[in-house]
Length: 494
View: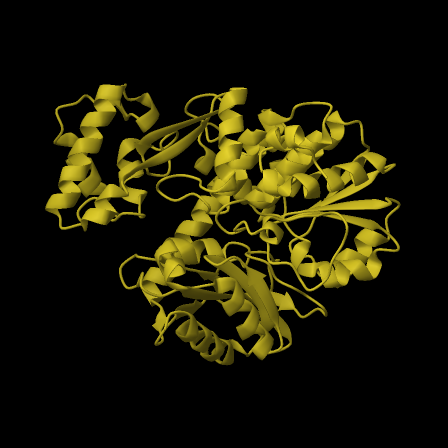
């Protein structure tokens, strides 16, 4: 048991004993195989854990998995490492993990719903009554273990941890909450993180002002959102010099007075355009800045950093994302930026596909089937972006299908894993991604349950979080899956 003084010096006291048990096992290991998921939370989880292991002098290797299925677990168990550290997955696959515990000792730092099995070293907020979908990310669980390893303080790793939490959609307009708040506080104390109130739009560091406004879709303002010429007209109407050397400035280039003027005019325009008051308030929110990173770069803002990471691992270059997290600002960052440009292009094309073809609306859900036209590793992101655009409703969750290629056995899905695949020829698998809103979650929506129950009803499996989850199902079962999902959502939102 952790002493009172030790509990006071940990980021999440409820997880103190669990983090300590994990740290003790890692220190006792001759070497560790670090296995992690491929999204932004998974990459930052791996980076936090890898840095802590290196500082503690513990030899380790790193592998990434799109989905932690039995084949992946078997492969991990077959390595020469006696201990495996699973970050941002592992909890949902504990029933399989324990089958290989004689070959490799598992240590799990995760925030997904645990399977019905138990291991000695398991750091998961859900086991202590903390919401793993909104209050602590996979990177947060890894951070708790990193802080427990001792030797080095490791509070500087709070910066990457916050990138993981924001990338996992845990930040609302008021910022991170719950156990995440303590990690933010440690990052601020360590001087690596700054929390403030600012315009709550993606791209404040890198996007020219017209693009910043045009592409902001969390709060849609008629005549500006999705309208390049409208955004330009709005900016031109302000009594400000918003250009430098003939080019539009970015938000980060503006003075504090200029920012206040633009934000005030934007709020007034939103009100005049009939945007509901609660949505207008969402234009301003809590933002997080990584103080050690250069201004005007994707790494300075946590939201842009997380998108950069998604652009690496989701295109089979987790090594690039990890290198950036570990401090490579040369070749790895250059490669990540190239991948990011491709990622943005693919997201834009995917969103245009949804806009042009629309979605099918059922009684309680809405959905679209992208087949092979949207990469399965990003179809969930596209689905989330589509919520609220013209023709897509915000009052029900959205479900997206994409081809996942040849069928394997024992495969399991977390939120947004998977590999690119071929046609739905009846012999392959289909990746399912789902997105909801925090408003729906407050009404009872839990997409993790929806994905799991609907997938199992058609011979697949799924899981994830209440606001975002995924599944893998046999090809040809999409209609039956939607029927089952619609029924589950109806029960949750009754």
